[in-house]
Image (cartoon, rainbow, N blue to C red; front, top):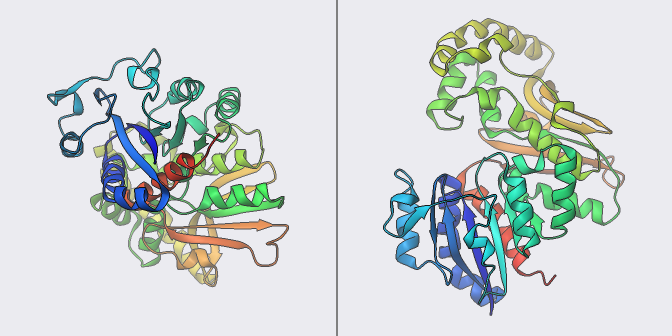
Length: 364
């Protein structure tokens, strides 16, 4: 039985779902794969729970339930400390364990330095956090050189959909990827569906926010940068030396609305209804629908509105579903398509757990 230590950063919706999934599947994982996954540390934004030999079931229960007030306030919690320094849960290595895996389920900036330090100490790492993969090229290249095969990040694009794994397989088997295109935002996919059903733009955004599909500030979704980060991750996998600033991004609102408070932004959304009503009507007159699409082709990487024909698979998307289409030398006339739920705590946690298990079974 291989003993695997887990250190998890982040215990929000996705982090909590992952912790529950690991525990629910523990017996099956042990029986089928011969792996025992043990949480040795879990941290939130300012608190840490750490036990060198593993957190027990009662402690894990409390950690998952305590999200509102924070881990630091638990009887066995403590301040998180300086991640960029000698952080005990990682510095101590994984004595008594065969391997250690660091899981970043945050959306924090600046994590690449800490990840590099953990990788140098022999840890593997799994990311849902996109930010370490879209840092300036020198930092990205240094992280990748340090990581080798010990870094996986399926959940950064398409949640639990096998987008990264499929692209890696295409590249590893010598295929030539000519074009990647897709809809990578469950939030914007839902909004597109609302517009297609003749709901106003402002009403669609408000409904998406009420359902929890958007961030507390919907501009984080509507600005297109989340999709741009996903597109850049794929472009860099193809070997394109692009920066985030090189991605052409079409926002869903004018620049002047970026300076408003969230309340002011929501109150003035109605000013955009006429523009979107016109765009939807113009597309419909041409027998087409609007979708927010990411495209990677050659050294060009862009995200924005595109009209697609009603026969296109993108037109059939509903709710938070994602779709990605790979056009390659092998899949040229009939591109390879992956589609399904691209958002949600459970499917994202499944993507993370899949990466954890893949790394745990590696021997290098």
